Length: 329
Image 1 (tube, rainbow, N blue to C red):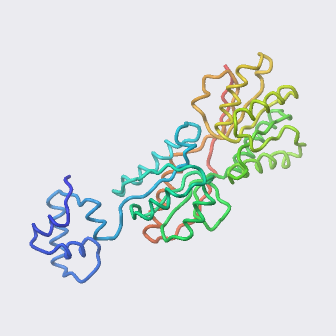
Image 2: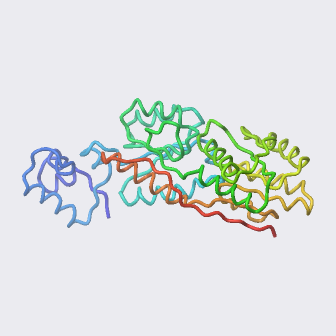
């Protein structure tokens, strides 16, 4: 199909651009016969109205924005690309375009610039670690948006998995395997997802009435230097398993363990919340939660389009996941 502008339609039918605009937008007084002529011409000519023309008629940009923190773009640790596949599936079906904006964490200047240019009809904010500043700004503007990830403000539409339940069940599995000295290495406490995962870790011990070894619980452990120091301590105190609450932490832990452990110590199980292709060849047992990241992208994007079309939407927390144990080789 070729693109067709409003001016071409008007010239070919002998009507004004204003008439074509009113037909496309569904607004204004247009006779039924004229409306039928315009739509019949578009359909029978095997043409496709371009989004610029549609935008002029409907005051829509026919673009949505996806905002990603810079820390997530260069890694394979969180399933960014799979989520993006789900978003694009919906965007392409609805004949929209996707504008991807990469921002520094906590810096919303790019979001402001994007919205002030009137280039998008709505936004998907990816990864709620950017949430506070971005959400505070979005609350001041009349642009539909959804968040992929957990948020503290429950009035904000967010789409995510139930990280607390998933973390609880992952930890329960380790406890039922007889593991008792289970270390926890968590990331930024500013991220509600990390807080949910830590709460689920505690829930598992409490529900099975097993004492927690609090001396081997570590939070705010985002740097490689910190993780190395923690591992040195854990290996000296003898642990049965290590639960990693972010993908980067898990990758760093396994990388370091591969250089430090002897054959006996390789009985340690490393657990994480997402499957990592980057660790599939390592010689350690890994327990992990596998989510359907593509479905997360689809649902988030579909929810945004509902908001754009003024359809009521509720936040969703999925409980569907699979716990997988990959035995050491």
